[in-house]
Length: 403
Image 1 (cartoon, rainbow, N blue to C red):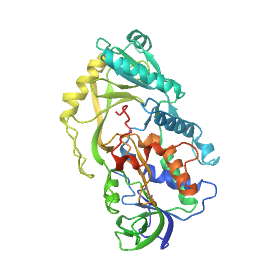
Image 2: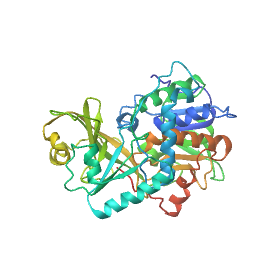
Image 3: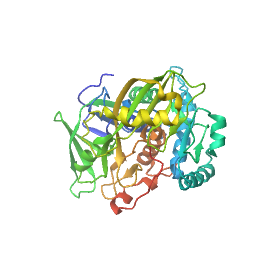
Image 4: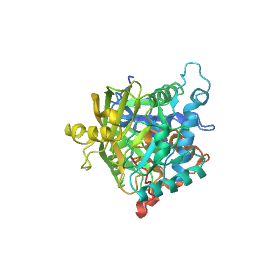
């Protein structure tokens, strides 16, 4: 998709810095919000999205979280995917993506870990999720290919949990938003200028030199969000962290779908069409530069393959097909999103720090931010728990179910 380099106007009601999944979602939901008719500009530094988390994601969805609001966010995402064409106004051009609900299988290797999973299952069930706690015998009955000698139980959910084609959502959000008048440009925010009282963003100066005034600024810049925030004197506890994905074939394929299995080793695995996908963080997990995608090629042989072969003996004989490194915009305070206005600069709105959950949370977050801008409040889901005030106070809202 080719974006022009410069904006058409000198003022926009909403300027969104970052045009990947979250930025595109906010733009589209704004155009779909009754009563909002403001001018929207989306600034994207790389319209190829080659290194964006949006392009390097595993595109999965789950309801197995430790915070109820995260469960409900994913429930809306599942409904949005399952009824995508309807949400897009019934446009016959819009394809209907499929949510492949093979579920997540969170495994426990100790009694304490199994007890923790039982507690999470109760929380998720209260929120309407279909999570079940399975004993090793129940796991073996449903999925006899696992080695369960060191497993004490697992949580599994076959309802609206698995893989979805998020790329279709992304493509159509961009396309539809532009058809409705939102502008996407290939440029970069270089300077944010505050008003005389320091309590609002007055304008954005682009890398190409143009200055545009704005009513509201939305930070949707992913791993570069701290750089955007710093232009306004705001600190964000977000850092890029590497996450690895491996695609492999098996000499003895499984006779049924492999749930997205979170192994106690830290490696996860799932079906991926006729292949399989695995992923993990590196053993040493430091912050990296936003453009550092250098791979540790020992990780597959030393960590991933041994974990796969241990958990599923048929995966002793496998062949690596492809691999890549992506980034999480990792919130070091509590691994939860930062969403909503700054507590002092009221027209600076965050949609950042998703720690790997952004793709699946993008429908609810886009809708929520659009409501906040159009109405001054959340009207569908109350997202105030993700507000910046907790960051300023150092008060974590911790999400324990982070992969």
